[in-house]
Length: 91
Image 1: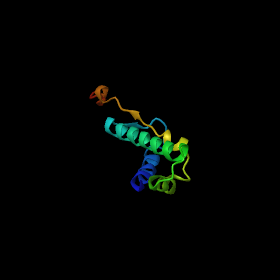
Image 2: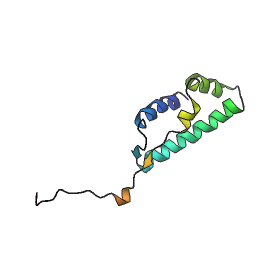
Image 3: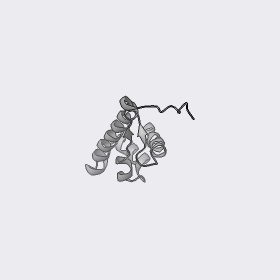
Image 4: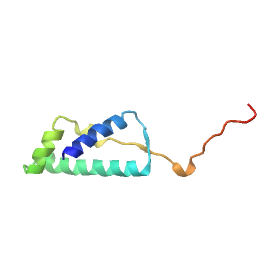
């Protein structure tokens, strides 16, 4: 759970700008992170479970807003269509 919380701080910095571009691996990891967060949030907050995992969850995420965490995202780069523009040699 501690690594999960640290990852959040990193993602928050990485994705501070809207429409931040990312590669497929990063997007997949981020999407999994968010789904895991939502699952634990639902278990601990909505269902109000009181086990050790929820204690840790509340310890690390208690003051963070659900909407902020659950909406982290990036825009997948279209690597298959990436074209590098070369300077015109006539300049």
